[in-house]
Amino acid sequence: MRMSFSSDTKNELTHDRAERRCCRIAEIAGFIHAKGRIFAQGRDGFGIAVTTENPAAARYLKTLLAESLGVSANLIVRKSGFGSGGRAYELRIRPGKDAERAFAEIGGHSLPLERDAANGNDASRSGSRAEGISRAQSKRIGDKKCCRKAYLKGVFLGAGTVSEPEKSYNLEVVCRDESFAHAIRRLTNGFTGMRARVRKRRDGVVVYLKSAEQIKDMLNIIGAHTQLLKFESAMVLKDVRNRTNRINNCDHANLDRSLAAAAAQLANIDLLRAENRLDELPGRLPDLVSARLARPEASLSELGELLDPPLGKSAVCAGFKQIAAFANAPHLFTI
Ligand SMILES: [Zn+2]
Image (cartoon, rainbow, N blue to C red; front, side, top):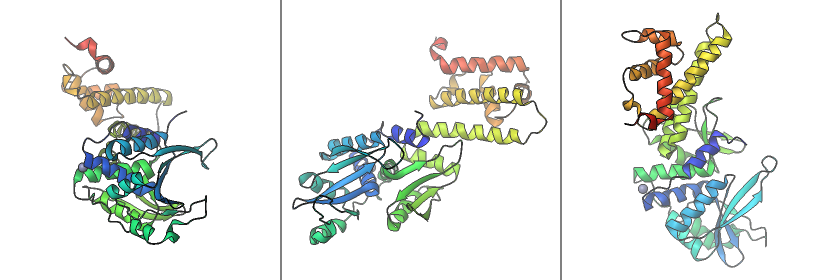
C-alpha cells in the first residue's frame, strides 16, 4: 500500500529523537497536549490516554516516555471508525506514579476529560483532584527555540497532516479547542516568515498553512528533512507542468518524454544536494546543474544555448548521463 505524504512525514519524524532531554520532554508535551485525555479509573485516580492512527507515532511516544521520563504506557490496538480495516493505537498511562510523573513533567495543561465507560465515573465529577490537574501549571516550553521546535514536532506527530504536494499545499493541525489552536498558531508564527491561521471546522478547530514556502519551513522546523526534499521536487514538477500546459502548439509525446527526463535530472540534482556532493561534480557539470535549476522546463538544446560557451544537445545529454551516474553510483568516481 502506498503511504501518504503525511504518514511518510510522521514516519520520518519517528526515526530521529531529539538529543537534549529538554526537547524530548517538549516533544512528549506537544504530543500529549494535542491528543491526550485524562481518564479516571475507579478510586485509583487519574491516568492519561493518547490515541493516534499512526502506529510508528504511538511506538515512538511510548519509547520517549520510557526513556526520557521513566514512564511506562500500555499500547492498545483498537478498530478505528475511519475507513475499512482502520486501526487506532492508544497509549494508556495508568493512574499512580507513572501518571503523576507525566503530569509533573509536561504539565496537566487543560487536557479534556474522558468519561470512564467501565463505571460511569466522570473525572470532572470527581472533584478537586481533576481541577488540580487541569489547572496544573503547564511546563514552559516557550523559553528555548530548540524546545519550541520539538513541541511543534510532537503536536504534528499527534494531530498534524500535510497533503500530497503534487495535489495541493496544505499543512494543518486539528485542535480540540480554540485556545489550544491559538497557542499553536502563536508558537508557529514565532518563527520567521510563518503566517499560520486558525479556522473553525466541523471536526474541530484547525491551525493551517497554505503557502508552499511556509510548509517547507514547517517541515524544516519539525525536522522532516527528507520529506522537505520530496516536497521541493514535487513543487518543481508541478511548476514545470503548469508552464508546459500553457504552451499550446507542441508535440505532447515529445514533451512528456522531455519533462520526464527533466524531472529525473532534477531528482538526481536533489539527491546530490541532499548528500552535499554537488561541489564534487567535475568539469562543466556544475554549469549544467545551475542551468537546469534555473530552467526546469527547458529542452536539452535550450539548456545548451544557455551555457557559456554553448554546448550542443548531445553534449548536454551526455552531461546529464554523467550526473545521473555520479548521483547513483558515487563509488565509480572515487579515486
Ligand atoms: Zn530543548
